[in-house]
Length: 284
Image 1: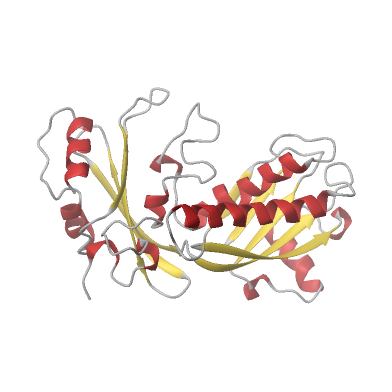
Image 2: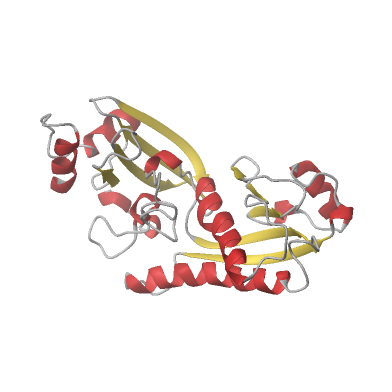
């Protein structure tokens, strides 16, 4: 924890910080022993924003969910603490993808390129695992793609409408860990969003595409859905590691520091914290 203390000492402009800070704050705010929490400190000014400091810890609740504790530090001694149950950022995640087949943006080859982009996302996770010496990827998305026409669903930006359509086909999104809707409507610009209570993600035509996407653009859409919006289902917030004028951010292709998602070994037992039975230096 010495590194954290020094970094935050600089961040707070010389304020004396205890050597076990911020681990002691996890005990104070959450009554949990977190001896080696994940942390991210960006000492630079980003587009006039405050200096950024975040500490996190995931504790498993079930096989698919975790309790996420987050501490956010301001420019003074103020600390904002939050705790909630989120999807666990690990394991084989079964995803139902509803792809609206617009001729203008999806075209004839869009479905194939989308599947290739999905495979590229899994390859990103495999590459990260290999670079850290892990025996297998921490995250694997197992995708079931359902392609439907725009005529089959009214206003697909509304989850209830999509659910009604897929249920009419005998498919229930409750049978999956998450639902993703890809709605590249050439007549309506919309962004991406994630809803943890429904474990759902919506990606609209955020770039106002008017012609069929090429492989690179499909890769961008997949990155938005799986690397950005899915991270929100894992509890990530933009404030954890703002990128401001850096389009891809410092942790591309991922949305934030892998350590904050539990993907690093922080307590020295050669296990990433998200898979560790005694994570963050805890004892059984």
